[in-house]
Length: 371
Image 1 (spheres, rainbow, N blue to C red):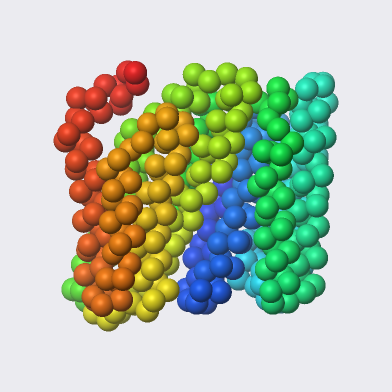
Image 2: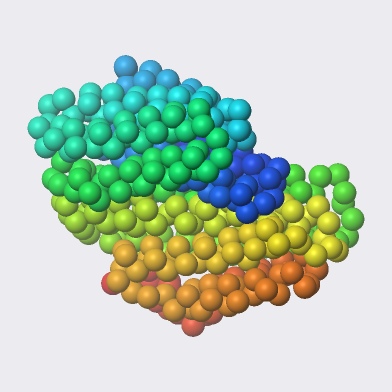
């Protein structure tokens, strides 16, 4: 991981904060839809750069300058997030298109001596350009038409690698790629910690401090579930795969199936921040669903991500996700503090079961034996 990659990721951190802020400012189902669409666009823009930087050193010469230009363009994308479905739609679309075009420029430079990579890039260009232009066009219209253009743009972007195929021109350095995605999960969890701090503010009453403690305990459980053994499992499988199969595994497990993890964390951050505003009250419907549903989405994302990587179904995480999903109706009839405690307890029960029931296997995995 180079310092330039970490520097680039700082803008993505700010963008995630903006998405959470968008949810807090517009706590409606329409606001949730807008926030998730924006998050999907941000994730894909970050993801394509993760592919690029996994196979080439971007911290040299003209490549460094282009990466810094991409980072500047991504900053304008992040700045436009709160108004992406309002007055700043054109700014968001234009800045996003520039981010994607700079990625194509960098990719073309990297592929200049490799015919297979050039072929893969040529197949990838139309989906990138069309999706970016649709987001620019979306800025000039309103209402359901704008949402429809966003959905079409993201569908083209996300389906592009599957439709054009992952041939031999797609390359990924497995360990670096897995580490980079693990870092972005850490970044998202860190944004949740920031949301806890913002929610607490200057009110340090006992109930608020208890809620903050439950919030950090919940974030810690989510960290444990990913980094204890799951990340090791997936990274090992990616390293053992080769050629086209490695590219497809990277696309599916990391490119596609890490988005639900990040989306779940963002929804959780919104729910926890709202909880801290009034710990004794009952949450409104949208933040209540976000609190339970965010963790549910995170766990289902885990199950799907690990199943694609290992072909093994993690049953305890599946059960916990179903329990949290069933808990959503309860979210509207208990105080916010109680709900936060129940969600936290459910996650730590999974952590405790896996750590105790599989302690010997867990120890072997963490010390290098992933058989």
